[in-house]
Image (cartoon, rainbow, N blue to C red; front, side):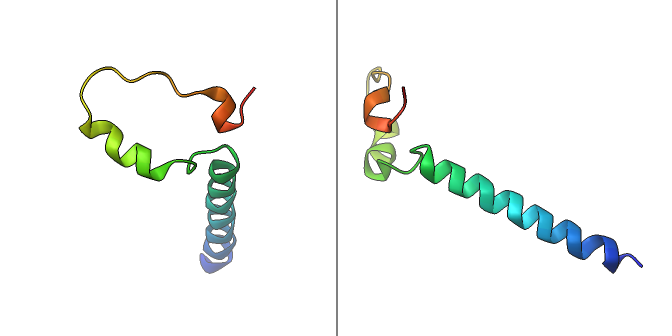
Length: 57
């Protein structure tokens, strides 16, 4: 009885995770992984990210 509930639930959760991943790709989360890796190691305040570079309005 519980498999009839758990299998659709796990498929739904997988689709939600896939949708979140695709949304992150389209919103520019992975545009500059090299810069993001070095940013915490640099000293001083960082400028705000450029919205034009990320594709935002």
